[in-house]
Image 1 (cartoon, rainbow, N blue to C red):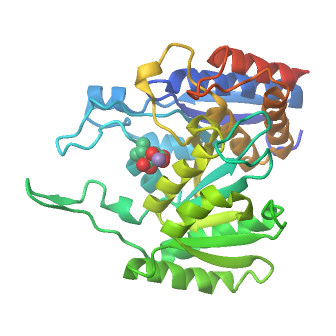
Image 2 (cartoon, rainbow, N blue to C red):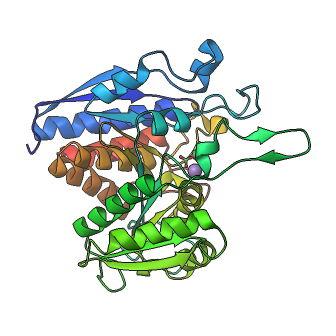
Length: 359
Ligand code: IPM
Ligand code: MN
C-alpha cells in the first residue's frame, strides 16, 4: 500500500447518457485494485448534469462544490443532453463552467497515448505517441460562458488571459514535464507553448508569461508553436511532443485532435486539477445515442481512474490499473472497433481489466 489513508473518500458524479455505465466500470476497477492493494473506497454520489438541470434549473444541487472539495477526489462521468438547454440556447447540463471555475481546477491535464493493440490513423506504433496537453481551465475564451453578448444579428464572446492564470498553469506543465521521461522521439523533457501570438494580443501575453516561467525550469526545454502549426504537427510528428500548454479553447480542440490519432475519444481520460479539489473524467461527451446499450468504450473513464490514483498518492495502484488496461489491449482481450465501441461491449472490457488487476 502506498497511500496515506486506508479509505479513499470519493465523490462520484454519474452524469448523463453513457455516464452511469462508464462510472460503474470505474468503480468496479477501483474496487478490484483496492482489494489487491489493501485499501477501501467510500463513494458519495453527487448528482449533476442535464437530468439535474431539468429537475432543478441548475446542473448541481446546493452545496455541491463544498461536498466535492471535501472528497479526496472526484470521479465524473460525461454530462449533458442536447435537448436540455438554458434560455440563452447553451446546454443546461454541462458542468465545466460550474466545476472548473467553481473548484478552481486550473489545470486540465489530458494525456494522449497510443496504447498497444490500438490502430491509429497515422503510421505510429504503441509508445510513439505519448504527450500531455495541459489545457488552461478557468479563463481564456470559455470565461465568456454565460457572459457573451448577443442580438439576433451579432454575438460576441471575449477571451481573457491573465498573468496569474497563465503562470500557474504553465508552472503545472513544467512540473509535469519534470515527472515524465521526455518526448518519444528524443527523450527530451519539453514543454511546448501553443498560441496565436502572431495575431492576438491575449495570446502574446500568454507566450510572454510562458517564457518567464520557462526560465525557472532550465532543465526542461521550452518550445513554441502557433496553434494552426500545432494542429498539423500533432498529426504529422506527434512523437516530438512531451507536454503542451495552451489556452482553454485551443486545448479543447487540440485534445480531441490528439484523441483522433490514438484510437478516438474513448481512449482519453483527463484530470481537472486545482489546489483544493480535483476531478477526473473522460474528455468526451455523454453520447446519449448509445446510452444503456453496453456499447461505450469505458477506457477513457478507466484511464481517468489511473490519473486519480496517482493524484491521491497511490502510484502503485495507478500503475496496476494502467498495466491491466495495457495488457488487456496488448493481448487482444479488449479490441476497439472502427466506430470506437469495444468488441464484446462495455461490461466485457471492465471484466477483462478487473481480471488482469486481480490476477
Ligand atoms: C471537454 C468538453 C467540454 C468542453 C464540453 C462538454 C462543454 O468538450 O471537456 O473537452 O468544451 O470543455
Ligand atoms: Mn472537448
